[in-house]
Length: 85
Image (tube, rainbow, N blue to C red):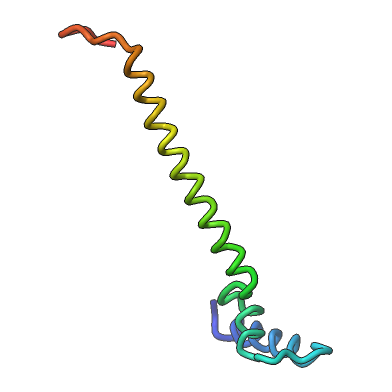
């Protein structure tokens, strides 16, 4: 981005802060939120919980995949030497 564009963007965020009817307790958090530097703390917690849940589901899927591959291997015929698929 060009310097002038950045100045306009930062200025617009400061205007939003100025026009805010209830001033935030922590101005830095407000600026970070509006500058999209990081998610809100409540959003970050929700994302962490979702990530933990998805990792657990992923591990369960990996285990199920291993079990199904083992079952499938029991029913597969041994390949003869020199035979192509």
